[in-house]
Image (cartoon, rainbow, N blue to C red; front, side, top):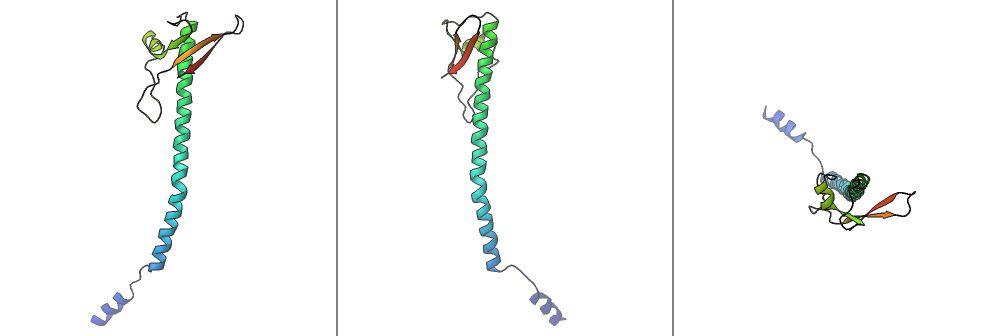
Length: 122
């Protein structure tokens, strides 16, 4: 009985050091490829979110302009002015940070027929 138990224990198989090192090396290569890719995805999404926020603020200024709400200084809407007038529910925060946008939306009117153009400037 003791011999049979001893034989079963001898037949146990495991991983060799070389096999374990190969697995660790493969995992290292996968991580080295994945981390920069994930970083690029995050940067790209922050850039797209920033562009979407700017478009939202420009559209709010466009809506205020078409509603005959003139800018306080005559040429540009401030974001707090748009928020106070109800054209923005709140001033958006910059993606990846906790700070709010602080710029203005410049209104440029080239001619009566072309309409006004709106551009966010910080």
